[in-house]
Amino acid sequence: MSDRLPPLTALRAFEAAARHMSFAKAAAELNVTPAALSYQIKSLEADLGQPVFHRLNRAVALTEAGRSLAPGARDAFATLSSAWRATKKLNETGVLTVTAGPAFTSKWLAPRMYDFAQAHKDIDLRFAATLRIVDFDRDEVDVAIRFGLGTDKGVYSRSLIPEWMTPMMNPEVAERIKTPADLRHATLIHDDSINGFGFPTGWETWAKAVDLDLDTSHGLRFSQADHALDAAISGGGVVLGRVSLATRALESGRLIAPFQTGLMSEAKFRFICPAGHEKRPHIAAFEAWVLHEIQSSTKFVEGRRLVDPRDLV
Image (cartoon, rainbow, N blue to C red; front, side, top):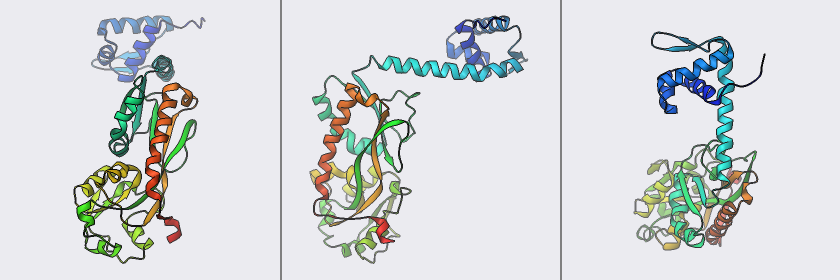
């Protein structure tokens, strides 16, 4: 028996039909007529010497041979597609696609993009603001910036911004909040996005760090860090804000962080890309720029007392 493979078009037609379990949907995906797709599958069956589909009245079902062939065909085309995308990227030295969470994108990346564009006019930067786990072999992404615990295996990963939180408010609210005790009369803004990242770093923990009896059961709650910061900027209350995301607002004076005590977070931002890709010119340039920019947030730690929540247990 010959091990010669059938034509690639016949295998592609079979893989699409097996995935959709529909000749019509497979034909639409491949932009061919159902008759043409049926011909390709019949050609495959002729080479194989047995049918791969049962043709029913208004449906199709895989035969034993079809069930045997389908997983391998699916994996083979997925591998081929991944290799094709990776190879095409070798020529796209001027395009850099970055994915980051919505909060980091809106509060950290977006305000700085003009500066990057002016310094690197040869790089076309594209963003995907999402928290979805990235698959570098499948997704059209060069770099991911992620926040969380743990380590990243099988990729290049570099820690970026040490995260810490401290009370923040706009200048008008700051006129009424002179001491931590004044927070008893303020609207507290809760950023729930930090929940689940190690030891608690919310208002209750911060109050414990400054030995303050504070009712933390009230206030506004947000699931996104940028929304919580926006509420504080607009005068909605006092937020226990993440300094990494609030840097520009603190620099411009839209937010004020008047108290000495801050809470450290176990979680951190990481710069992630496929192993070895960090040496590619456009990725290396972006990483160097990010590392330079994050230095602006380190000035806010001067004179602060940063408390590890684990020391309060």
